[in-house]
Amino acid sequence: MTELICITCPRGCHLTVDEDNDYAVTGNACPRGAVYGRNELKNPVRVVTSTVRTNLETEPRCPVKTNGAIPKGKMFEAMRLLDDIVLEVPIETGQVIIPDLFGTGIDFVSCKTIK
Image (cartoon, rainbow, N blue to C red; front, side):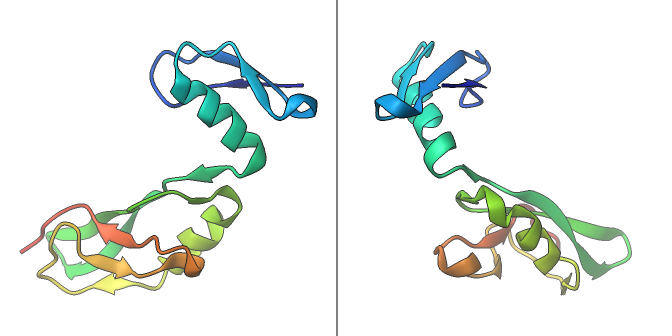
């Protein structure tokens, strides 16, 4: 059995996941907690947020994030992909910065419009 704290909502339910019983979850206050507990042990994923450089002195960084969750084990590799990127203005919110990370169909996108 594994104990987790659910991060799906601010409630922070204390979950117990029984791997020997088909990943049965207890301690969750809602169905989302059960899904989180099961997925966290079978295939953990995360949305990644960061910033990248721009070519504009007055706005030297632009916030970016993945537009979906990627495998947790790929987070640091995904962050390294951002190291050498310098965005040219104008930048639009939702603009794809890096498409299809690791063949997942998930993109890094801009979170800010910079003109």
